[in-house]
Each structure stands twice: as structure tokens, then as C-alpha cells.
Length: 281
Length: 173
Image (cartoon, rainbow over all chains, first blue to last red; front, side, top):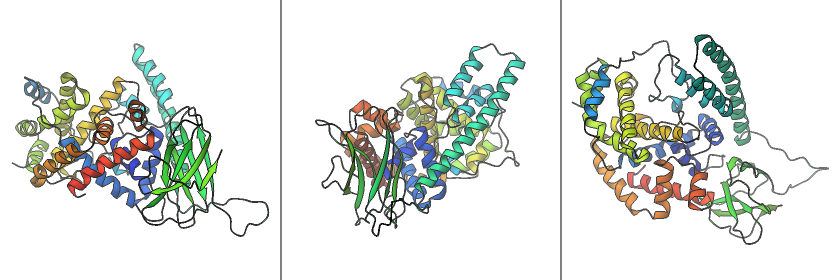
């Protein structure tokens, strides 16, 4: 991923393929993948490697009697015939044959609801409601109706967030820094937002110099004396010098003294290489 | 009978064909589930569930072809992580990305490639092997791995990526 466009970091794509990012990061990555063939290809190669990693596991025979139990269950399980009118979701990554297409059961409804972004607390509460109470039909239908409305709202929120992520990461979005008076040659500038309570971090930078091949910018969290600087993500500017790190996950509760940006070898570094070209506290 | 023919027969409702699918893939499916869940009973449940999906919806795979074993391996890992996470209060992963079965390595070259992959994994330094195992087979997020290992988040990411790149190089992808 060495062109001038802003892409998902290779390491994050590896984590995405494993489902090892946070929910928000999974969403923002998915949004980017919808529009970026280059990152799709990188993801595809990661997935091939991960499938081989899974298959490299040393084989173990299932327990005694497992085959008989499987065949007994098989005999009681009807096959589901394809529904020609039911089209799969447009996103190929979301099509998961390990999710059964059964009538809307209580469990599946719950799973659907939980999988909607930002619906976690609500889904948890609803799950308690649905599972803890002895459900009569009327109460269940009322709960289901309410759940559907709120799931729809959660999906709307999620879609808006995905659009925001895409705008922030888009190489086509125009970024303008406003100054008093006119500035002939504006200097490089970066803005960082970090929430210590959640570890969420965002960087937006402008007027960055282009980098030679094999180099990348890296953001650092500089802590009080005695603590090592923490790497917070690598990024490359686009053709107009703009760059962003959108919703990176930094450690929670850090005492931040300052943030700094250095130039490192592609892939990033464990320790910052001087000079620090941008800094702020 | 190859996988495509077996799946055609499964799609026509042949339980014998499904038994053959079980005989061919139950070991790899079970061992992956066991590696993630580390409980034989839970691993058997996941194995049953994954293979019964082949029975219920063989068309979903027949239409795409590819290496059934490789694809089942990924589905099994994802489903096992899903089960693992539901036992602890973390978010479910029903929407975890799945590869296109057509992208998987060909069955004809599978043994050769997997030997290379195993050798590549064995060659990884522990500092890369550990985080990769934690992310893929223990279902930990990068932040959880950073906390567990005491390593900075960026270091964890870099090591996981490096480990995966070693596998990719061994496979030439």
C-alpha cells in the first residue's frame, strides 16, 4: 500500500481479517473497504494466509461417538432450500454461511440486534428482558416491535458514523486550515484528539511533505519522564499533503504530556527516530 | 468423489454424501474448534454446527466452489471465537469477515503449502508467534493482547503483521 492515497494500515487490515479490532474500528475499516480495491486485495491476501494458519493446526480425532451423534442430528435436520427472491447483502464480506437463514427466532433476533452498531447496551438490556422473563406471546411481540424500531435507529446511527469515517479518511475530501490573513506557504500542521477514558484517538494533518519510498509518518504519545513514548499509528499524506488517523485505539488512561510525529521506516518503529517534526502538548 | 461432487449430492439430500463430508473434514474442523475453545464438548458442538450448515445450505458453497476444507477452517475458527466471546462479556463477531472460498489454496497443492506454512510458523520468534496465536486462536483484540503481554499497542500490531507476512511469504501470496 505504497501510493499516495490514504489507506487502512496493513497491520489493521491483518487485525480486521481476524476480527481483532474494536467494533468501531471494524466498522470504519469495512466502510473503507467498500470503496478501496487496494485494501480489498491486501485483505484478501491476509485471509488466504489466515485460512492456511487455521489449517496448519495439528489434526485431532473427534471424541468417540461424535460421528453417531452427528448423523443422528443430521437425520433430524431439514435442508434449507434457496430462496430465489432473497438477494444477499451487497457487501460480500458480510455474507456469512455460518449464520443460518431461519425464521426470526428469539435468539436470532437477539443476535441481529446485538450486531447492530451502537446497540450494545440496549441489546444487553433487551437480552435480559427477553431471556429473564417468562415470555407470553403478547409481551414478546411488544418487545420485538420495540426492538425492531430501536435496531433500525441503531443501524441509521451506524451508517452515519461510517459515512463520517469515510469522509475523514477520503483522499478526495478537501481539507482547509483557516488562518487570520493570508499565508503564502502554510506550514505542516497536525491536530490530535485523544480521550483518555476510552483510548480513542484521531489525528488530522495538513501540508505534510511527501515521503520517500519506504518511509512513513508515525504519531507518538509522549508520556511524562520515565515512560517510553508509545506509537499511536502510522500514516502517509495524500498528494496534497493531507493525512489522518481515524479512530485509532490507544491505551486507556494514559497521562499524556505531548504528541509528536516522526518519520520512520515503513511499518513503523518501536521507538521514535529524531527529529520530531511535529509536536504539541 | 471430489468436494464439488459430494456437495452436489448433499444438495440433493444425500445423507451418505454428508457422512462422507463429515469423514473428510470432521478432524480439521474439530481440532480448530478445540484449539480455540479448549473444551472437547464445546468443540464438538461447534463441529456439529458448522458441518450441519453445509447440510442445510450446500448451495451457498456449491455456487462458489473453492477449497471446502480451507473455507470450513475459517468458518470454524470464527464460530469458535463467537462462542468463546459469548461466554465472556465481549462483543459477538457474527459479522466477522469471511474469505471467498475461491481464493483459498487449491486442494491439490494444499499439503505442500501447509508444510511450508507450518515451517514458517515454527520459525517465527516467540514475540511474533504469541500475539498471532492470541489474536487468531484466542480471539483477543489488539488492546487485550497489549494488556496481557505488557507490550505497546503499536508493537503488538507490528508483531502480528510481521508474523502474518511470514506466512504469506511462505505461501507466496
